[in-house]
Length: 234
Image (tube, rainbow, N blue to C red; front, side, top):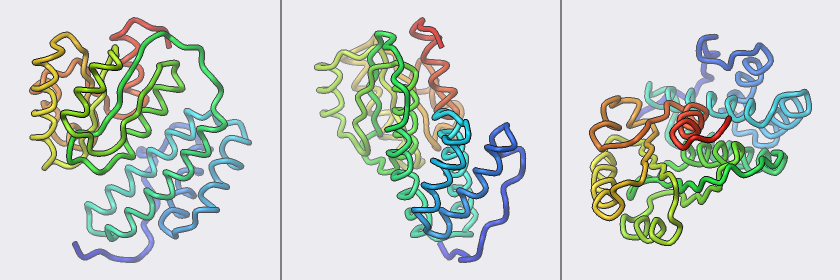
């Protein structure tokens, strides 16, 4: 793709978090990402976000909204893949700092495995989901990017989760999602599976096609649906 290196226009208000403060923070954070300014991005989230009263969940939403905008700009050929990678790397750093400040939530007794399907290297959406589930009291094992089918099955065997979350961002990894769910159903027919990621957004019927118990449009939505499915309080 050939991309413009210019600044992106501000996001429309409908794309921003609900509060004015979070919306302004999201726009400033996005600008820091596109400028490659890691220290400013971190300062914005920590000082203008957490220290001014936003919760970890609030700033998670800010980061997620900014990342969604980064993805849109890349799809529209307005930033390069290098810029997209740079922006995501900044959010990885920031998210790690936010996690250190998160208040411990009492365990709800439910175990969750979160993984990207084999071949899927875009792990940031799954990282957001793993952190959000952890903040909600789930016992989370996060496996990261491109988990081979055999390794995923071995982790399910040993960990015995109450829910498996599979992430797939790129459309060309959908066959890998189908293969993963097929193998899992053969060995663990009753294990609830949640799916999420960009490919699920572009193909809304994908979750039902692979027999998933639920699909989340974003991290917060997936957490709420997981709580309902497993019968634990919010």
